[in-house]
Length: 224
Image: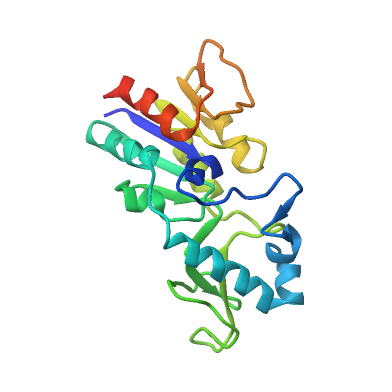
């Protein structure tokens, strides 16, 4: 069974109504990104950071997977599929995909500020006073700026086994995620789906300059 590795970014979830990471002015929901997505920001104003993610979490419950998520899940009927996503939502899971690596954490999980391996499912608001078993404050299970990306080694191992690579809704400018395409075997057929693609077609790369819902369907239809 051929192994399709899929790299997804913010453009994958945009058509579900999840706002992409940053507006053109570099602000995220009106906040400087470092205020709400860095360890320093959390130390300085934990309440602001917790509130920010509480709003993201609530928004997640108001949206549903889009057609691109559903079409990707269909590939599992005939292929081994691994999705490596930069997204912190659970829309791939809800659409039916079963093999997903979240590079940047998960919005529906929280973890102890004392022990980063003490991770728990979390679907309600997270507030000051929510503590782990050892009594330490819980924080969103999100990889913030300046923090290591713990799943990157696993993602590299997966990419090294790809027969086909699909890249959807990501500029491939944010590292370390952007480096992953360099770990697939040489001459691996690659499909790059993005309305403003940051690369051009060549003998191994097919660029599909479309949004996720249109582009994924086009590519998936050629596989099934």
